[in-house]
Amino acid sequence: MKQDAAEGTEGRAATARADVVLPSLGFFGTLRWAWTQLTSMRTALFLLLLLAVAAVPGSLFPQRPANPAVVTQYIQDNPDTGPVLDWFQLFDVYSSVWFSAIYLLLFISLIGCVVPRARAHFRAVRSTPPRTPKRLSRLPVHGTLEVPAERARAAGLTPSGAAEQAAVLLKKRGYRVDVRDAATDRPSVGAERGLAKELGNLVFHTSLIGVLVSVAIGGLFGYNGQKVVVEGDSFVNTLIGYDSFNPGSNFSANRLEPYSITLDSFDVRFDREQTSHYGQPLDFTANITTQDGPGAAEEQQVLKVNAPVTIGGTNVYLVGNGYAPMVTVRDGEGNIASEGPVVSVPSDGLYTSLIVIKAPDAKPDQLGFVGFFLPTAFVDDEGVSFSRDPDPFNPQLNLNSYYGDLGLDDGTPENVYVLDTESLTELNSRNNDDGGIVLGVGETYDLPEGKGSVTFDGLRRYVALDIHHDPGEVGALVFSTSALLGLTASLFIGRRRLWVRTGEHPDGRILVEYGLLARGEDHRLSGEGEAVEKLLADHWLVPSGTAGENSVQETVPTAAGTGDSRTMTKDN
Image (cartoon, rainbow, N blue to C red; front, side):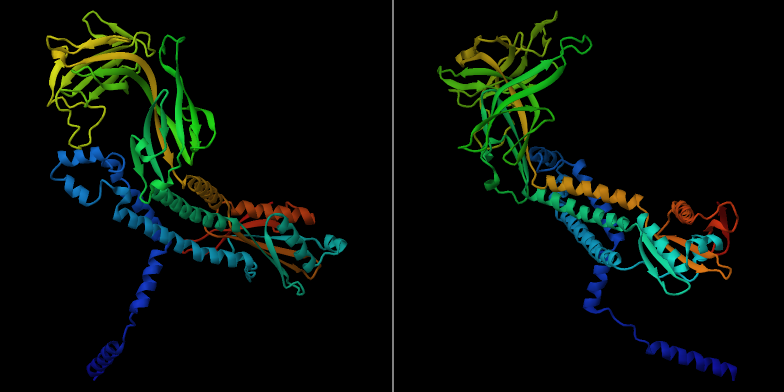
């Protein structure tokens, strides 16, 4: 029978389980659950970490917006992996779909975290401190004070009056207070401080959103470009005026302010006193003339390293400099095929510079020159020329010459500082019978086979400018500063609650009991309890040194996590 009864019970339980129908989330329930998961702080931190990890490929692989030629060369050198990496947008990391998705999700997650917490904080600020617990001795830090009957009678002190005085003292200490049950024989005071901790936390997370927005604005509408300007020449802020230009995703050429910059002179001061640092540069000064627009007045300004000039909503930085020899190239028919300053690229601290000259208009054959420029030329015992000083005391050009098709007529982009000599015929070099070309200022060299001539007319300096426009940089600075301030407040401000309850002993003594509670772990809570005790004791002139009359008790949690199993008493 027992077996039959057991079988019947199991059958009824199985039937009951079969009858239970679990509720389904449904479409809106699923959306609500997904929103809850997305807007949790854990998800926001995960997305922030994921964004940092997603930015790593941007430093491992060349990026197309920064240097498209390097990306093209990388794909050509790696025909197997290059196209795959390009399909995953690893050469356009910061504008890729997956990076933008993480960025957008982080933005939404932070907003979803901040808005509810801001509402809760607003309600907490407007509300009164929490009600007084029945047993203050259960709080982590608590203590008692006793005002002797004689002193209480002399001062006319009552429990209600003691509560009012305690409220005044705590308010001066920065607590917001609320006196409860003032008309009863057991009045109490509820006090709270440290709401700025949560405010700092909200400011921090709100500032993170502001930083994200500012960076996004800069990436969408900003731009940066590079331009080399020779002494006496001008730069106009138009697309065609840049040597290289990197626009933002939403950039429009109409946003360029039509200002101009003219390099009047460029001065470099070298060390001429210290023997150990002789010849090293000490200062770079570019004297420029700027004009905000076609009809604006000209302004004389000074541009230095780490001291940019701001004009037309852009910052202009001095990032490089060098020499630009003035060279005239005539072709085989005696016509000028190329004339003007040629930018040379320094390769060492003495301004030994590589130089490339291209004359695609020369006839009957195009001409090309490659070599180096020496500011102060010397020749060693082996006949090798070198520069002994960065100042142009003895400027000299050493060139090799070539003729043929320079490859500039088919529309393929070419680096102006590189001459591809594979398809060219050599005219002059140190290795053939005609020798290399060595020119001082004012000297001319006639090319072999009647191909023309090259003249070193003079020397100028040039500067390399980096022009940066970021409409979100001010916002990023403001929000990053406020984020730091908010984080500091959230870390160093402690949020605490304090309650004081007063009562009267039958013999006339006034009993004062207090307790403190911190939100989260706060190692300074015990010190705050001691400070509050001293504040109250000094006000009522409570005698110290008597155990049990004036003590701070700190609850020591047990292994089970309760806080009332035993206490530590600190006698004052």
